[in-house]
Image (cartoon, rainbow, N blue to C red; front, side, top):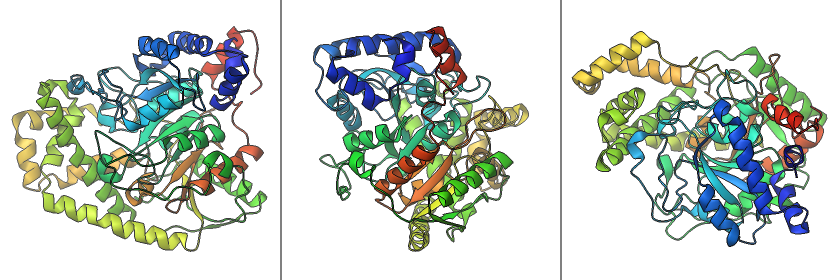
Length: 509
């Protein structure tokens, strides 16, 4: 098998080829490793190779549904026993787990051959992937642009053809954002659907969950079948689906009522291409017989953003403390993370609790919306994939904040409440390109990004669907239906097409 042939198959199809004897796991692993070596210098998607572990796995391969298919995990939460989990930070390189995370164990039991870990921003905190530790990752559709974040390395790996599917997680859009940037499909499951254990009970107070980025809906459905279900000690045991998701996916979703909005919930600008992406999706949906009208949940978007950011800021002091306990120095943490740790540490427990309490209000309001509409449709991103550095704070602002932080004045001013304007600006700036995704995280509902639009400049720009709690089956059914009328599997990035052309077999766009 050559690269062109490899790229014509999703993970499900590759596993079928292996079972028929048309290829073998060693051949596929060699293809994936070769492809990574070819593109690593340009996209920097894989931050740690586990090729020795993968070779050892081939000798004792599980006979699961994806046995022998090459796979990548994210260097965050997804612990691989005996291998550092860096969280994209120098400060966490001393953390070496003694056992696999539940999701990693399930991937391995499914027969996936894990040969590396993917790049991410420090502590998975940003919607771009640019850690100091590993260097920035680039988008295979245009190397001058970000692949998104925080699962940006995973998205770049799939979009460049290294693997057909890769693992990620989503605490504020970290699966959906890179999927939208890289022309991929991603589904964020309901809270509690997938275990985060055993090292963690709930990531980010339950805002984050595990999933994959893929080129086909059926791969994501199969991955959800592999991952779903509780582990001993989990805080939740969510009701299982009526049948495997790979079977439910093929069923007709029926007549759906869908409300859509292209208005930023925090009042920021929405790019015309993002509006156009939703308009195209609306036309497709109506053509499929669904009822679609402009409507949105009655939720104060600014209040939701504030609540999300209190949780987000609050995570940073805790993980910085973990790094210090492992022997890390302050300089091992990036500037913006140090600033967030100081700001987060200035928030009282009472104030944080009050913000977390609001999640219930948002969930109830969204449930009222879902009593009338099966789904909410929005842009995934408010802007096409940004250029590297486009979202960074100005250098002057970074200098002043660094000076305040180093002198200790930042913490004092924050505790005195004298940095409200600065905090609000950081918050607004950090969300202005991605204001739509946090709703699903705080409410615990499933959501997906579907690659239905490419901009005039040739960049992907996905749209988001949010469903009621536990309705992953409806999302997958709709995605499968959309995949049938507006297929995206063979729409390859320039970097992937370059590899195909080098193999001498051009795949149609």
